[in-house]
Image 1 (cartoon, rainbow, N blue to C red):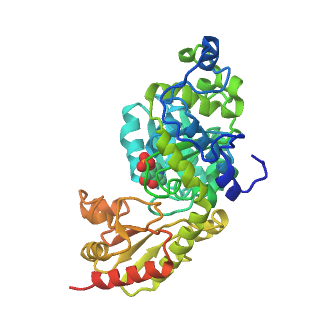
Image 2: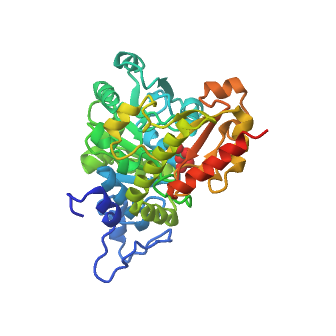
Image 3: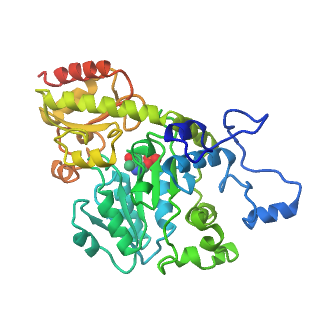
Length: 428
Ligand code: PLP
């Protein structure tokens, strides 16, 4: 790898560089184990004295190629692939936060992450304080405690598509001497590189744009390599780990200490490993990520502009629209595009929303975002139907809200599908 390669080149060439006679395409190493002739070498592998593979729960050559490519694209020092985005988020937090400790998080989160933080982590004794991402620095600081170990946010919030104020979040995290962990799923490293904007750790649901074709569930943690773990708050990275015969992660592994600890301690004990086949799909997906994110963003912007003016639509929400509260911030942090997800309000509320979804022909009713194919969801009649209307509204889902994950089809075909579905939605 050449350090000066641009992200488009890293996407294609990074992560795996075959030597003469080796396969051009990264092999799917569908093997749990690896064979050796020499017991001393295996001992060295277990002691982490030499790099290599001994069991796919901990490391695998296909996963390794994916990890290297995404680390290069994010500008990080190391990465760890996981079985899902939820596993990536869980391991990233559990790596530095234990029972009796606390994190501060932006409140605008993917619903699954919100549940993890508000319901499941408290059962492990980890408390989470949610802050409005638009809160002042002083208000944010007031949420911190001596036991706080991380500040968490999404680069683009799902589904509100609010763009993170990186400067403010990075400043607060650095004042508080805790890492800023950013979920970069919706933006991807092509549109936004959080590590260059003050984040210390990046997490992804690789299931979304990284895969890009709706084939595989997975996640990944990327480490920035610059955070000072030796500030007194993170003894687990500095002091000997009695569960790994006294390993001192920071001293031994420096800029990849966080990743090595997550791998050899948490992946060893909890085990949410990426499958080699899925790692291959993510590796493949990353190759076309720059091209896809350009088209997703262009199509979403065009469709949002069309919807905003449509007489059957009451409002449209996309950070590339001037009317969106994050418009200016999108200009600052997402100069190449604002990704592919938008929401809009349909006139006629829930009944019209259901009719719209059912009338779409090319755009499919799917509970997913980030696919090359366009998808539609009317949360009030599907994912959020167990909630009362009042509960739906307080969780940001109004009865008229429709979410579109805009794919990479031709924009003319997308607009004509939306046009005929909107017409059908308004029929009695
Ligand atoms: N983070 C974000 C922003 C997401 O949208 C999702 C899933 O939709 C996740 C994390 C969880 O990822 P996964 O479904 O791969 O566990």
